[in-house]
Length: 482
Image (tube, rainbow, N blue to C red; front, side, top):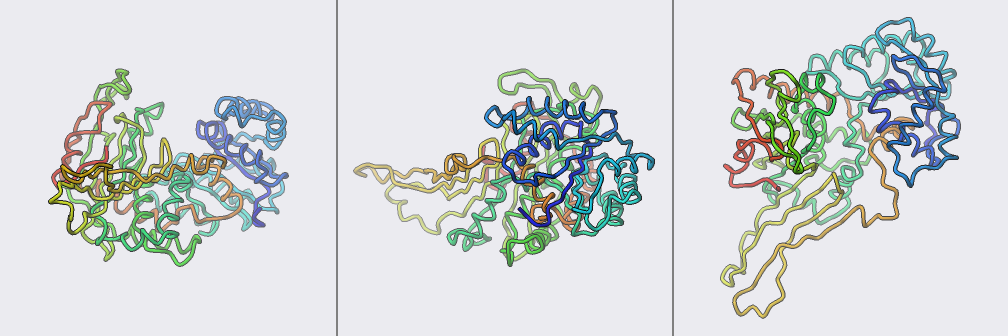
């Protein structure tokens, strides 16, 4: 266990959906595996009034619902619940923070704060923490998105947090960075000699990154309609995947080295042209054989908010000059999928051409969800006597993380991120200059949408998005990995 481990954890939004589905199950898993201090106290806070015992009952109900059956242990569940206490707080007023500080108690052994709040509450919350003594040098703070709605508002939030916490105590959360396969991307690149010599414009034709969802609004009506797909998914998750895919080899596996290289990529992103972007919004259709409504019907009001975005991005540096990065994300798509596809170039000369051997370029698929695997598509010869010519077939070389590490416990992203927050390890968190570089690029796209009046194109639910999204890639002689 890290010597810098905190003795207390303060959870804002402790009665919300994120806490019930992700945070409490993750903390229980860390407790069950004895990865956190036996004496770590967990204090929940939210607007609603609850006693400690009522909060424990809520937590128990959440764990009953969201923990896998094989993780439930009554004895360990009982000792975990004893860690929990609760203090109601209206974060918009300063008065309640002294009571919160009393509930948290002694923080001389270190305090970690998980802050998930509406953007307009960041400033009063930080002020309240500071004035009540909950922002001293032994306190670190984890910030859940959204961190603003554009570069300007993001700077306001970062300035507010920075007024009380130094950068080495600020942990900006992007839960994609906690995914095992995302971390494996760095291992794949930098621990295997075979990939890095080809990981550039000489060896790679293009890169595709897809994050598709089959769900619609799912109770996020107000937030999503104000946000849209570009700010909800591209500004954070997708650009972090671009940065990890495209970055130069860091000097070391540490927070400073890795984040230095990521921000270089984000700053090298070329502004996207109007002909390199597609906006879409789902209409009625069928997902998984079930008829579903369109976005406007789901929302219950007219809207021009995009539920689909496709972009052709470029990283303007020596390594990636001329290599497009195609990005797409959307709701109510044909299937749920998050993946990075690295399409290598064709071999310079096909020696099998006169023997009817047809070649396809190698392709590396890094699947993040729903299953996790790394698959390299290579060419192989079909067994035959070859009298009619050599028959070549594309076959996969698979590394199924689920099977290769079948005995290892699979962990959700928040387990890793909460543990790193508690122990003070910043490698998988986002630095301020990264966030601002991401917003700068996304703000330019939104400006083009406004200036050029970029149309929101309709697509049927259950499809792969509007036809323009397919054409974005097809006009370059390429196709999405569907």
